[in-house]
Image (cartoon, rainbow, N blue to C red):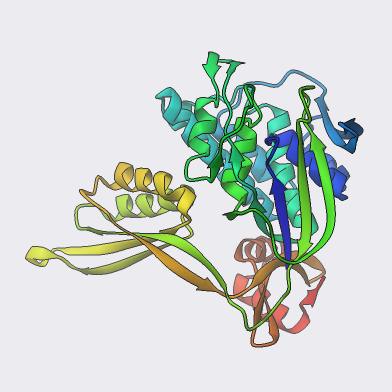
Length: 387
């Protein structure tokens, strides 16, 4: 099981993270070709660089023409058409949705009206998709990081001069482990904070396992070191050892929504970042038909889930509990079914390995083969080949 550890001592930005992945050995040429299949005319180049005697890579992204300001629906359209795996698409989509909600919150506007200014240009699209694509290429299943250094100062944005951390960055850093620092310039950008928010599961001073390789990615600003070091480690796979973390469980009883409104609520809670949503029908007071809705989410998604719950249900209250979760060790892999590569989860239990294809990829293959998902799954049980 591969783990990636981020040393945040000098901050993080989107281009620093992707550059560090390149320095670690990730070849982004196939991703550049995927972007250009949409006729975006982008170039993803990584130049060698050196700061304070340490070598690494620095991103040099470019595109052929001026790009329009994009709404969330435009980002959705690009991601939907992008020829990458469904897991990369869904991770990138969820990250942009999170960013849109944060931007809407800090600027007091509706999510659907958020224009992606400097945080939504093509370079940031390449940063976010590149982050998920790079981790998938490395087979990384867990991302840890050191404490986040706090910083101050001012920055010029499309909204004018803002104090640091920028408002969106500050929201994205909520519930993260912070430490003081003497930096008075922007060492963590909104895109860098978004990567932490979406990818890091634990903040710690080190990591277990065998160190395999390290990489360094430099930012464009020539101020100090301005670099992100990342470390790839191989964790011992013990089938008898369970993973463990903490999740929030939110519960409420509902008897005032129509079926259509309830379905819309469940859909929006999932889009807000929930790990799981369950709807339990029952009989409420005065013999009213109703239901209980239970939602499980990661700690850093609690605020967005609560907001979605209240916004789309107008329920009067939520019961919230922080609970321990035990889970089987697993990692992302690929299998071949009908000569097509399918994303899958590889699960370890009792000394054995089990591979479970991802439903989204199965349904895509089913549409392509003009068969049902059941037919694809059952045929795959006989001829699936792990890649």
